[in-house]
Image (cartoon, rainbow, N blue to C red; front, side):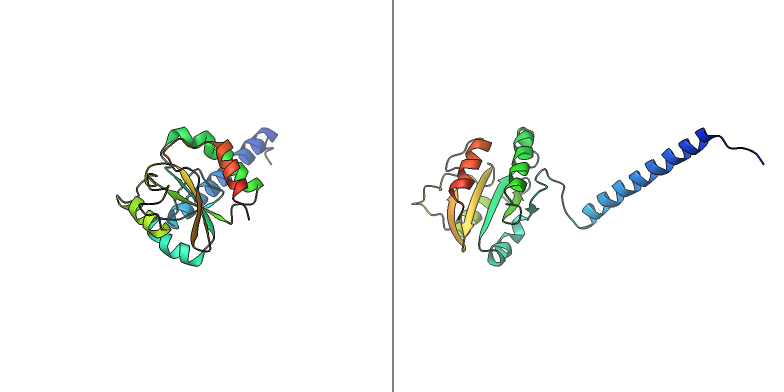
Length: 167
């Protein structure tokens, strides 16, 4: 009987492990695509689509909504830090994410109408379809919005905002 070297066993083991890792990676990728989920940087919270917002607000009358564009590169570092903050403070069950990339032209108007923002509101000038923001809703009523003017989102301001609006 021919003797097989240890080197061949090591190579065979490495090939098997790499094959298993590739299969697991592609199966997870397939499941994500099959379920219609998108991959976004806000992986600690659920993503909802614009079309599901009305039903989601009926089913979840107290919620925190994070609005952001997944294709905006300048937010990568912020969202990484924000994900950690969400997990550390157990906000992932109370918070949802809406990707502003691909929302309809009238998303801003529809959201303002849904939140009861009218011409006398200080939030009238906020553009919800383009700018990052955080909205807090309690018992189907608008409690607060992080920014009432259009500006870049900042982690320190987010922390103060969320701490100041905790029940």
